[in-house]
Length: 429
Image 1 (tube, rainbow, N blue to C red):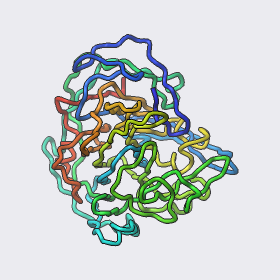
Image 2: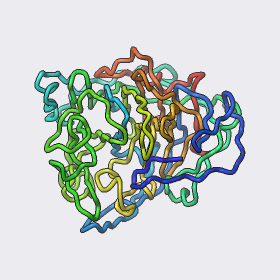
Image 3: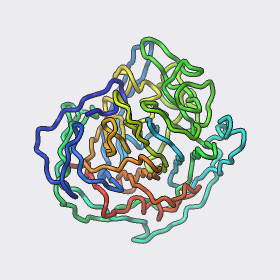
């Protein structure tokens, strides 16, 4: 079993000795070192709220890193702070959008021939240029938009030794238990409109409010040294090397084991992002306890084998991780101490067509239901960080869903709505 690490070399997770239980829908399968139940269209993580601490990097000097404890608490903590998005090939990213709750949206990005051909357009706009849109209450129950949730009462995942202190490492686990869901109290998703703060359209060559990065420091931007390796850099149009300046990712398949990071277009200045690696390219991540992401992508098969080959993934990190050191010395990153990773769709062994979701960090979660890997046709996916309900939701959307400048709360509530073909994971136990 391979788990993508935010701190460096691959980690082989332990194989649980507990015998397989019945899945909620169909029989369990054990493939490539992992249990799989049935495919689903949505996965919800309930009871996200927690408090604790992780090791925040406070200094990076000559390859030596220092840290101090950082306390966190809240309905989506610690992922209520800035996060970054990561895509690993083989993957074809077609569209991406970032929204916040509260009625702010950016103007539509206008494609130009120059931006489509050379990828230099629409990186100058900053978050302070947002224009206000009045909140619109779309209440349906007691003045709030709500959706029902089910709590899963089966077996929790088996964490590896040390995960209780925030190591973020999960053992392989048996499938979820039987169909033991029950309906509980409604979960609020917040009222008001969700405004689009960042947008990317590969076909039109447009990127507004976003910056594309990768790990090629020393190639035109960023830095390289033998103590810490490559820092972040601006990504080239094909995502396979560094760039001297920000450019728009072109409409093409990102190759096997190549990674693209997406953050906002707001640069880190002074100590606005906390500690960052000296000389790195540093941008603010996507902030807020309530945030919505939409992405359209495919994960084509390549038939390659070996380390990270034919193993695409889409995941979210605490943005402090890539700004310090995503791959390398564990003490130069907050990942090991539990600052947060949220795997959205991840292929765990070469050529598999089952994509899992897992939460790593102070809270660990995830069961054995999976999403079908979109090998031939792109899918649209919503990821909702729902502070009002202290929950996180991943949903495969209908093809006709538009990444519009404004999303109503009714629409976002629909992304969080229970469906017959979904999985509910209760983080409280």
